[in-house]
Amino acid sequence: MAKIDFEKSLAKLEQIVAQMEAGELSLDEMLAKFKEGMALAQACSKRLNEAERTIEVLAKGEDGRVETKPFPAEPAAGEDSAEEAPDGDLPF
Image (cartoon, rainbow, N blue to C red; front, side, top):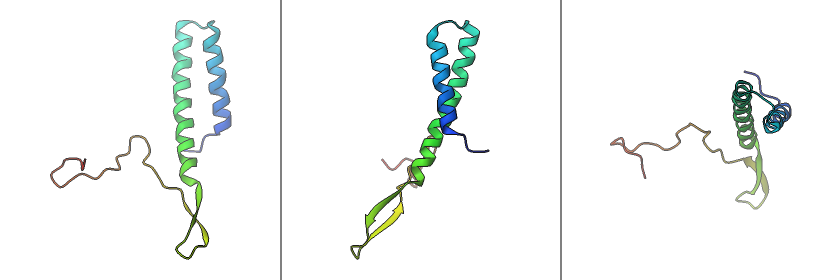
């Protein structure tokens, strides 16, 4: 699947919001726009999360020199990062 063009998707989402706020759509059109807008919002959110994971932060190494390291990755929505305890319970 190709990466979405974030800026174009965001612009389309803003256009959909404006159309919905204008109040000139039928119920069926409103529902279709809502569904399209939700899909765009989810795609934009996913793209932002991907971008965040690629950011590098500066940190000092043990020798005091500045070096780069990957941004700490957080699990994406729907991913479970917690390991289960041996008895099947979550560790908290």
